[in-house]
Length: 354
Image 1 (cartoon, helix red, strand yellow):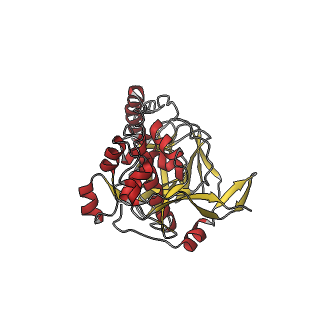
Image 2: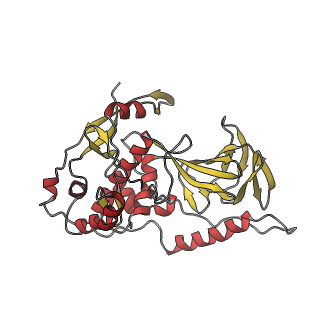
């Protein structure tokens, strides 16, 4: 994560988020977002909180069978990435994948994040878990993709070449979209992702950008940044800190292609591999909530320990280990956030009334 604490005026925030297109009865309407204050937690409250019942250890979505599936997937996708040299290429059909738990219904507005999941790549493995498509910038279908079959995407001059064991090599323009059919996921590099992925040719390399709903993005970030078997109240504090950080960069994106990267320089994001039942619960139970200070969005920095927070962020931010320890002592997420972000309050994203 970057080492600055950013504050944004509410007018700028409303203007930036007010341009979102939100489908209503199949017609896109431009609706602004407003900030609705939630009960604030003062720093003093965080000193003597009422003990809260510590939730039982949540069950992960993945188990030994899923891990074994992932190993098989990686092996077969690597086979698919190689150019066919034999007359009878090896089969690249992927093992069946049980789909991740579906998100709970939402009441907060959906914001689409643009996350760079691969940069300066010379070769990317691409697949869809359900029948998919390669689309051009106008939405025209260039190629249909069979489910669970890997393809290698490589730069090729002024185009992108795709190679598959059963299809040979075929070319697409310099910017295309990879989209799975409803209920499916897109595989890029090493992980499965929700949403859709844009592949962009940049000179002799590829950029892959995942376009994904904010809360579905957070399902993964919470579990990628914090062990998913930690207490739920710590995961909820992490969800709000991650949502606030994402909103700050939604307002001030890294560049015109993406708002953030997917590594430690931003927030770690591993697609479905970061998700668990507990991370879904943490995000859904804090839906739309973010940290605010004087009418602005707080870029809520955090790190593994207090020592790293001091060294990397000048002491401004949340210690993830400290949040876990406070949760084990009975602190709820409001008191955890109050302890690490004094002077801030919670706000919620809502749709404005027409």
